[in-house]
Image (tube, rainbow, N blue to C red; front, side, top):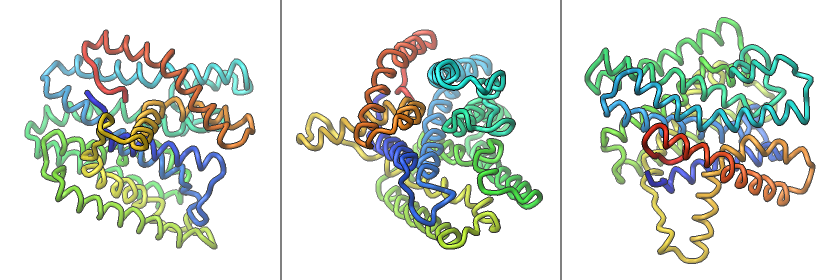
Length: 350
């Protein structure tokens, strides 16, 4: 499966928002959302879209329930876990042993809810994604078995998104949970990824929303909603931070932002760039975006260690990319090849 340049743009943009925020770049008034949080939100939706596409293709093969689950989970775990565990062990062995046996919270992806993310703070988003990977194939397989028709399956997904919004509202309203207490709490964040899954369902079933005239309109609506919500957030937090005393940013806001991002996906999937026919500058841009997209996972996990070296920004980024490239080619790639071999097919290395 060839890479999609438009989606590569989204992935590269999301990781650069994270890189800039962790360097200290801030947009006044967007705290506690931060531009890095926006980048992760883009990645959540994009991840849901890509994973949803994989699952719908697997379900179409009409394999057994257990076969579909084992194939999906094997591919996901061999993509996510090896590098994640390698980074955990590296930090524990060479940098900080103070966490002791509490490292098991990180091994089992329980740190967000039961321990804290201070040991490896970027892992908070991986917790949400990993539990999403565990839950989503089971949900979809049962949905297809119970509801049979595609329209009813789609309705089940919409109902699930509504359900997440309802329980998040009850949780925040009942216990007055602050923004950060919701942001990394994985049971209340699944709707961000499921909006991507719904878009994948529409794409898999050749919905008209992926045709250019409609996708352009959705893209425009998505951008207006995206910047409109950020402006609303800004008005609540610029001079006097009212985020934790307002319900919408802590409840519906966690739906509005990813929903606006999901509306841009149909248009972005239609963006193509022919490397062979591009001029020199275009080829440089294409290679930078594609390479960044491929290295995103490594960059995300590695950059905090490089940032701790306290070098200037340009050198820090160059070292981050260099280490991520080495890790991808000599650690991740061999594992991905092994994964493709044992599961019997190849897909883009998401």
